[in-house]
Image (cartoon, rainbow, N blue to C red; front, top):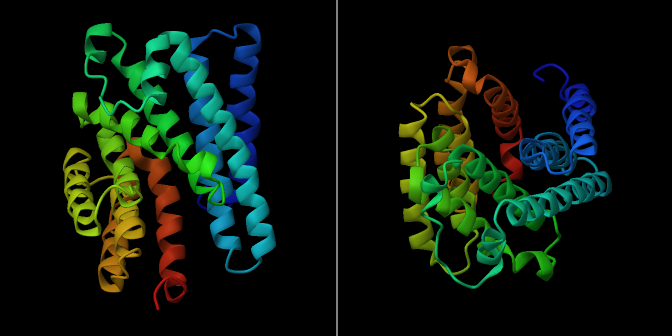
Length: 267
C-alpha cells in the first residue's frame, strides 16, 4: 500500500471483494458476508478509486471524473446492500432510516448484536456519504444526506468510543455538509467531535486529523491550521499500533500528497 497503491487496490479488489461474492453465492443471507460486502465495496471506492481520482484531478480532469464515476457505482451498490441488509435483520430499521423522523435507535444494546449492527450502520453511512459526494450534485442523492447523520448519530448515542471513535470522525464531514447548521455552529460541533475522536483513539489514529483538516480547515481556508494538523498526523508512528497500521498508511500517503499540493487548496 505504501509503495504501490494501485497494485494494492487491484489485489484488494481480487481478494476481498471476490471472497465476499463467493460467500454470498453460497448463502445470500449470510449476515456477516452482507455487512462485509458493504464494508469492502465502500473501502475500495474510498481508499483506492476516490483517492486516485483526487490526485488525477490536478492532472487530467476527464480521467478523474471517470474514476469518480466508477467509485460512485461501487458506493451505490454498497448502499443497496446496506439498505437490503437493514431490512433483512429488522424491517423497522430501514423504515426508520428513510423516514423524516429524526429519532435515533438507542435500544441496539438490548438486541445483543451491537457490533454487527454498528458495523452495518457505519459502513452504510459511509456508502451513502460516498455516493452523495461522488454524485455530481444529483438531487436524488443529495436529499438522502440526513440518512448519514441518522446512522452515525445512532452509534454515537449508544457508544461514542465504538471502533476507536470512527463514527465521531465520520460525523465531522457530515456536520460540515449539513445545510441545517449555521457555519459557526457546524465549526463548533466539528471541533468537539474532533477532540472526542482524538481522545478515544488515544491519539494513535491519523484519521481525525486529516478529516478535520480537509473538512474544516480547508473549507474555512485556514492554511496554517491545515498544515499543523497534517504535520501532527505525520508525527504519529505508524508502527506503534497494529490496529491502525493500514488506515494510517493510507492517511500518511494522503497527508504527504496534500502538503505537496497545498497551493491547489488555498488561495
